[in-house]
Length: 245
Image 1 (cartoon, rainbow, N blue to C red):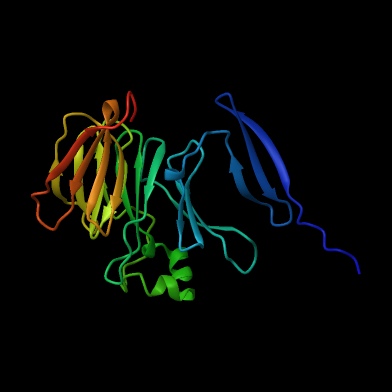
Image 2 (cartoon, rainbow, N blue to C red; image 1 turned 30 degrees about the vertical axis):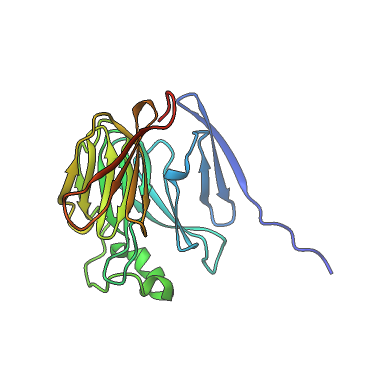
């Protein structure tokens, strides 16, 4: 009995802006599978949804690519492209808390401080995945909105640089040079905001204890409570590190 040979792939190289780029092709189907840019990536630029859908920014382009990792035809298939949401390099992705009462949203931010919120369920290609997967259909909002590749809402200049994103209940949390801001996930309306003495460079949400950790300049750590009221209290301001963000 002969052994099965691995699938054939074709690699092509190019040089864009002095960085080596490699494109991987499926020679049978004639389409590209993936592209490697030589650009350093971070975990905040990769979003995995339910172990099946992968959202990543395109190399050197302000586009978001959605890959289905569990298709019947292959081990990975590009099912959607989200254009026209950014003008700069996308450096932060956030998947807000899922609820049966909320649409399946994705929030992205770029280096210019521009924020976009996407309703993934409004994508025509994504709707096919939702209908075929009970995990998605049970957590997405049942609505009859037309398929579109446009963002649900935008927010400009939320930070003078790349902000950090998080979520708490029905709010998107944004930390950056302009302090802390909370956006209503469905509408993009600023529900509350707080100023800080220094720019914020990192953010971590502890959902069950309702604590928000924020990293500032010179190793300063802020700890803030999260509540339904607008009067959040600053519990701790502590210098934990030296010359660190």
